[in-house]
Length: 136
Image 1 (cartoon, rainbow, N blue to C red):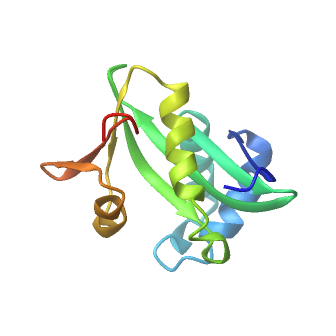
Image 2 (cartoon, rainbow, N blue to C red):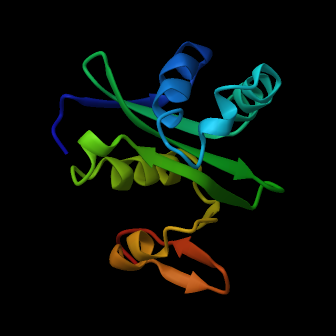
């Protein structure tokens, strides 16, 4: 990934960029039109393991993972804007999540199975385990 891409921990200042990006996704547009849902969603982003990616001032994507009992993280959302896909941004967001939450096991709750299969992650029942690059 180009070094001009910056990955960092999500903060409240990023909410507008996240909402704007996902609002263009038909599967997530329900959040945009409902103020109560936006407030709940903002709280979930803040209280999860969430990271964002920017190219200069341009928002590229984000990841959000739920921490269960301190033993595992579950990626519930990985979103890269269509014009920034195929640039390894999603992969790098997964890596920064893992790097900052060692030794937790990271799993994916997703309906995008082909993406995770292509990356070689191990399917365990209905989730994928994100293994370290050195092991998988």
